[in-house]
Image (cartoon, rainbow, N blue to C red):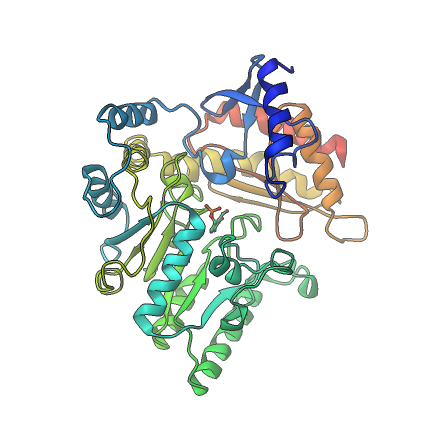
Length: 436
Ligand SMILES: Cc1ncc(COP(=O)(O)O)c(C=O)c1O
């Protein structure tokens, strides 16, 4: 199992890497992967692991996709690794064109940046510039990144404690998650209605005090909190309220975009058009690239130089993003996520509901989440960890976390072969049955 590359790499990592990274979260002796192919990662001794983490919802088309290799080879061959945004580049321009082809016509301006949290910062600033208002409404359970601005609208208290953030301009609205401690097991539709009522009240109050927000930002389906999909119509109602109060609607699609939830974008589960949309992760399926898609009168009117960064729209990353979009379109992978992948999840995982240790199973396109509880009904992060470790022993990589730390998340490539997925899920169910 262990080879010389791993020994050396782990030793250097342990010696030099900032301990704030998660490298040792899998265990004291994490694996080291040297090769990837489709849904598999391989160690230097050729042990294959099924990757249901996908680099945190990034490698949505699996590892080593030929179209990605070709895109990188083509652009590196041209010898331009970077131009900066002071010079135009054909790959960047072509990516704008490709992005416009998969988004509503109202979202045809793009501001490219490097990573998700920077896209969120960009959207916040664009909304503040457009409305000349500082306040932001965000949602409980939402995750938007770790830089100071994005962290301010990320709900989890433990991520804030030490750090100074901009929380005094942020108002959190409840999100329809059934297992918020106080309203365990309530009816989802009623819960969504009460969340919307709170939103409307907060907007009315803000209007009466002359402190309306610039934007309402949310994940249309919450990702890191564990594939939490509000009832149909929830986003439509938020859109209506945003328009009524003249507040911009920002949808953060960084986790959910590019087919993960069985639509190109999660906001398409409701028939709405946001004002700004944050994208990243699955956009390139690998290289760092992110952006904001927005209305012409928002992203097409702020002055040059008001918000820039060095690596905006890197040509190689843009080429990879174009290959991603072309590959998803040509092979109809969004339909694959919505069809065979979701069907496998539902068929294999919903029987787990019968187990007293399982509180919820959610399957949305190519994302699934399983929540574990203790005998007294409290969230069970220990059991979740035991399942995760047992999966790792069987060479299945699963994502652990969720809003209460008790959730296993499965994020296969959206193009995963149904047979491979079914076989892996059979093993996973076996593991859950033996551990719980
Ligand atoms: C919805 C959402 N927004 C923003 C981010 C931050 O992206 P990054 O980690 O690239 O900064 C994430 C990361 O997981 C995310 O899931």
